[in-house]
Length: 536
Image 1 (spheres, helix red, strand yellow):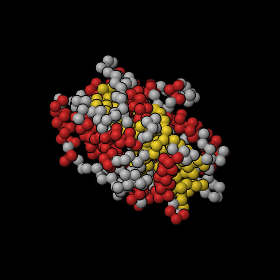
Image 2: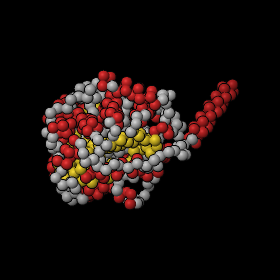
Image 3: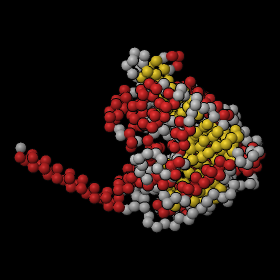
Image 4: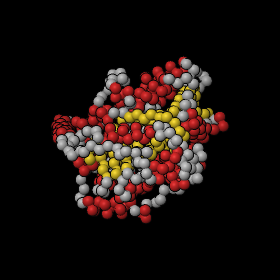
């Protein structure tokens, strides 16, 4: 017995010594922060182009230069086509800002489009958040190796770059900074045309992934609003949290070798071509490439605003009231809440991750008391790719339904079954990723912001507000298709128990999380008590 205790004590001491060594190593690594001094020259958007086919088409579409034009891009093929088209037509500048830019078929295809523009003399600025770039280092360095191209990383991980775990392990003492990410998505050509919305750059956002693909939404925008988008881009590009890629990354290849490698991996012969966009999408729009080549641009002409959270959000922790500074008056969340609370008739929202919190629930309560109809489409348990967020969301389902909120959850099975409407998902899982809202059939929000605590407190976001009954009705049509053909409608059981039921096709009513395995439901139940909502 004594020998056993001594053996346990020795093993215990060895374990503590090993743990101590690991802590010391981690702390030593964590002390190494961002580069103290780097060469970072400020640059700004070039004046809007006034020559070339892109400028000509935009000028012809806008009778009044103070106006803007818009086309929703719900179909993946059309969204990819639009980005490629404005890249090919760009004459002087391309400015790209993304949360994710994958080194996959789609990422390499668009990287080649952008670099080809640079080879024509177009100035390219590519700004990426650094959270999900562990597999993209070589591609980013190769893009940056080309003349006329600059690549910067926002809020970077300077050490342990092999994967996400080693990145955080090497920067433990800097977790507060690294937990804030740039979630904005923006693609601007010549200061006159842009694509903004929910899509990152990666196969799953353009229906090219074998495992899972997203239903998402972007908007093609031209005219005056693009000048505002360029200003927002410049704020991030010239921020002290944006670092030239070469100040963070290194490669064994020299510049010439990087360019040769890039040409090899992005050659058209090595990449499957993007699927040809149909003649028209769900809204009857032709692809942007066809409109630019053959004319005219078929756009909804409207006034609009664009907002973005301040880049300084990465250094600020907010625990008090929302309105702390003038910067937050320009934040996306503040302006969404302001528009929603002014609703008089109806609010329709779509978001993949829904955690309303106390302020969101208060908005719903105030609106419902005024008789405002409120509907939301979000992911079901079977569709979500963020189980931890879903644990927080489901705490709000019963209270939202009790207020009279119309709640819909996406059905992967129905999305696959109705593939011709949403795209050819095949055997892949269909998931919702669109972040948008329609207020009183007059105001449209499309952006990068989810309706959850992370977008509120930790991520920077970008959002576009379009004041157009035409665009509002188009977006409501898309939402109705998702509700009718790809979702379950939730309801409270009539027995007064507070149980949630899911109504499916033909009035069928389900009483458990639809399309989910018992193991996934068990895991959800195990995680729920331990999921801190504020850290999601």
